[in-house]
Image 1 (spheres, rainbow, N blue to C red):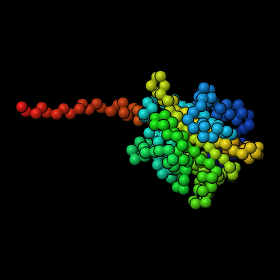
Image 2 (image 1 turned 135 degrees about the vertical axis):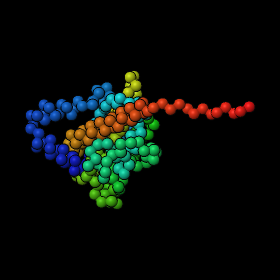
Image 3 (image 1 turned 180 degrees about the vertical axis):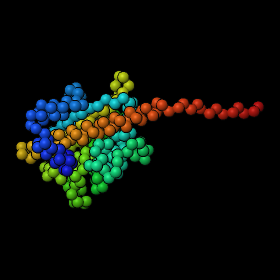
Image 4 (image 1 turned 60 degrees about the horizontal axis):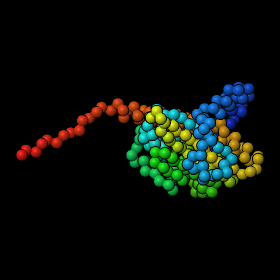
Length: 253
């Protein structure tokens, strides 16, 4: 997870929040927010890419909009594109998009989902209006460092570029977004992050700590951002005035 933000989140959780309050208030809230026990245990697209994950985070949110109003926001994500709908001051130079851009709707397996000017995740799975899964590993991140300088210390967009936190030299991870229609006609958005770290307990402990509270805060903000945008899009579409089709004038006999 991103260097600067995770450092701030980790220090904030460890220092500014009293131990008792964190244990009895913050931690239960983090563990339960947006979690559905069935969803957490369900296999999702992309789980097979990193089958032996050391850290797994699953979150979900119900959106009062159809799948078709949610999916476009996912496809256009990325640095220099629509952003990540999270904390823009940590993710972007600018603001995440508030509209759907047709020129950002083209995405395919093998494409990059950029997290910074020098690179980003690689798209591994793309099932239109169902699943988007992206991948990153230490080999990819080392290439970014070599070609573009140290990995950025940004927000959730730098989940694949969190080397600024002195992460393990070997890791692999996926980030999945899955959308499903509910019986009520709404959409259930599920996000899952899976990372594999070395077996070394000390190194793994640092990595897991970084991915804990920090990633929760960023994912929560992102899911709320997607929800708000999709619901606004749905309201706009449904309230658009009806324009009757223009009937051609009959041709004189």
